[in-house]
Length: 142
Image (cartoon, helix red, strand yellow):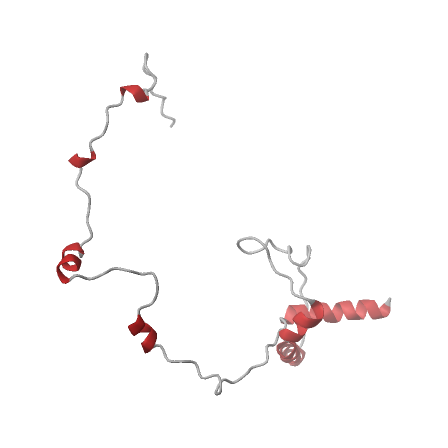
């Protein structure tokens, strides 16, 4: 049930000239719980950079022992370029590749495992590998 709007005859609001000034000294503000201890112990709170002690505690990186690993995506980026999403959040469905239609394909488990193995080797998702294979088939038939 809807409430009726409160319609009082006369003034609709208070003008700023009628508002009295506020004395903030009348209000108690919460202080830092540790303020007394910080003052008593003379602790200096500065967070401009890490302290020398913390920097000494961090071990130096030994680049002689580093193992270089090949990126699965490096070859694909080198040949096809890199496409970045601009903006916040997840892209709308189909925005990155254009609108698509969802279709189901039945495959034997052995073929699916081969697809997964090949996709892992190429550094792509299985659905991307299937799409690539279908496009290659269509282009060769044309």
